Image (tube, rainbow, N blue to C red):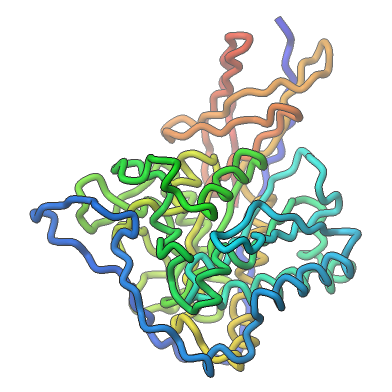
Length: 409
């Protein structure tokens, strides 16, 4: 039996706050219609679950936003300008055939490394375009500051950051929430409680593209950018009995920690009068089913937040620079949390020096993190300030090892 050597990196997490002139939050509201008080009948017959279609914004309001063609050109221009630290690729196409473009930012883009990966997705809902604008600004900021800002340099050198400004270009082009098939993409993923959309033939191409993406790339964490409120939302998004209440996932404490990183780094999200600390459990706010967030955590091994970054879904373009200023540190700090917190390491055999892929489990948390098959690196996000007892399983050699993990503030 091979002797094992563990290389652990136990790191500290901090959320960096910054100060800008205040902006009045207008108090966004959910477009969810709650189906009842928990005692009424609940019968799922549609894939477009609980999404209320809203009036389309006027063409005048869209002035100043990038069109899909503008966005595509801007992304191609970006990867030419920042070719040393980026690449452009597509994970598939929308219903109407528009490529789902992604920018990867790293000191070794396109290569597999023993580093955590983070993804940002914007414009999941076609009538929530702020995320696509902010994500391109994020890419450009990192490119412009890579050689002079320590945070930008740390992200480029220690994380593979993947940025998809628009998952729903078809919905954006017609200024509507759903995709070209009139399906809400954030209700189209397999759900842990209800099997209403298990038929692969009915799943949307944008949804399938994301699911395939997570099979190809092992993401440690991610976030989707939405609009209509100002809050950092975390799992679970739904409940077993369809009622509205706080329903915690196994890593609830870690998710709360990650949500607070975003909220406290934001100019005024943490000051919310509606959401304590500017964060919320999804099911406590309003339950949804078939959401991307829960699917990422369950099936993708990826800790995902749903970030409501603008209380107005489609603000005037003149407001975008201010919204960017208020979210910039939050967006950067959330990515940086992948290397600033938790337990990271690689597993080798002492006799041959070969990586040994395995499973990492933390006592008291019913969730398994897989080490990479090729490099045997693992990235286990954990809330700081505690001592954890971990177990490493190696099914192929039938071995289990107990490990003490310290994650300090």
